[in-house]
Length: 216
Image 1 (cartoon, rainbow, N blue to C red):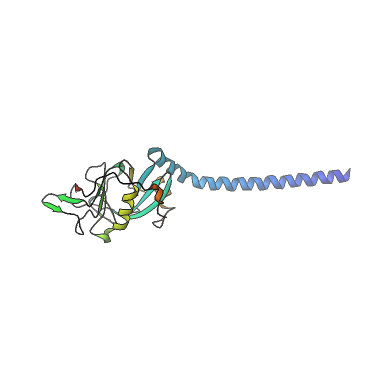
Image 2: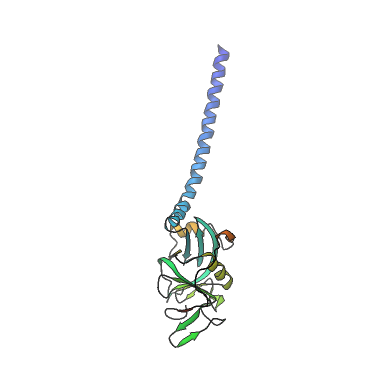
């Protein structure tokens, strides 16, 4: 009888240790899940609106391309200067142009190295604003434009091939939950999207554009 009680006591102690270990493990998993909750909510917010979404952080001066809830590419950009800020809010890409001609009052600049729009233009649903190149590459990473989003030539041409008319564009002027979740966990060294997300362009080529205001 004494042996039977001793075995039962050992079994009870073993069960207690197992339960303690299980509790610790569960707590660790729950804590890790909580850390991911904010980011997952932010990503789901993007997925609910569009399969492919561009998210721009004005304070970070970065642009993230999100596809199917995953950041597939991140680029450094120039945003609007203090006197000519970039618009904030939700927009859409309404046109995609290659080799754009720049028109402004009394000025026409054809495609080429002096064109302030660079080699590509992705117009936003906010008239006069878009994502484009620049003839001032040193402005990238700064608040320097007249409101548009400027990109380096190589980055611009890469992004151009990854997006289509109708894709959503979110421009954030402060580091809210979504911006923090996206831009704190990714860098501009993020891998390029694989070729299966690339499709043939159905948009205009060698087109012209009149930018709103001054050279953007």
